[in-house]
Length: 400
Image 1 (tube, rainbow, N blue to C red):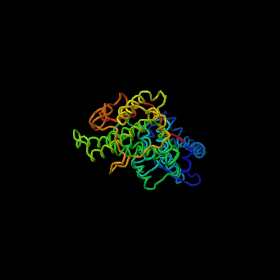
Image 2 (image 1 turned 90 degrees about the vertical axis):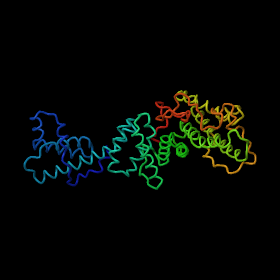
Image 3 (image 1 turned 45 degrees about the vertical axis):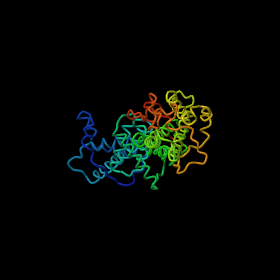
Image 4 (image 1 turned 180 degrees about the vertical axis):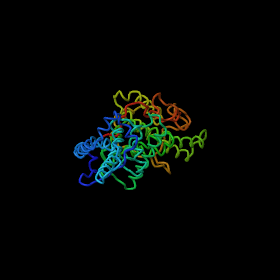
């Protein structure tokens, strides 16, 4: 609370609001004790204590100020007494406002009491809608909200993340980035929150946020969940759209240059999915926190790898072992002409079981139990292997 000291000026005579009636009712003392505490001598002692604690113990000064203000002013208030009352009202008001700004961060970062923290932050934003610090803090942690099963709160968290990121992109900044540590960390977590919370409704857009989140040196870059989400976004977004289009146009027909080109673009997306699942498996390693999820990721990796490699898994283990030494590939640029050596290994119509639909349908219908992203509805196109509700969250924003 030392940060609260700056708004108090001891050298000037200041003033504060009248204490709300509810605050007076908090004093549960016998009438005589109350009156004894409100004698002029007692009030003078309280005021002396307040002045003595303003720099060293503002919490004590605040409590004493509330006691002083709870006392009846009396029929006649001198000018000097009114100045003291106004001074204490001003202090209490500012102290409570500053305390709210500290409280929401403590609730979110230290106590992990997200509903309380977001409620306190919302109070601040009601009067300071452009408060970038509050928006960044709430937005960067928004991906942690779905397990609370509060749809409105999750939607609000997404809105905070989107607004904070837009403000940062427009050139706004903060003087201090604690406890996140830097602008890059904030941008990474804001993108991650947006990607995770929009993955089900708009996977193609979410993919861009998730890829951006993985670019910065944060715990997200080393979290297997990040890459499972990326794989799922590819699968249920651009791959689903393009493979459905392929099925509509070319299923059961002879191969043509146009069908070959579309297949080459599909294979680009599958290769990105393979890369992302391989990263998830590699980062999960032998950590028992990821045992169940890793099994699902590995199974999906094998399916898509076989799809691209003539139903074989030769080289898959080597891929897992080496994938983290390579940069994360960007979203592929659509091909407008076939590469000279393009000889696709498989087509959506002949996958030997690697693509569970067997005909280029939108996405895999296999979603391993317990791997549905937190907060999403049951769906055959849920990002397989994505982060389950209730699992540890190693990718939580933290001090750096």
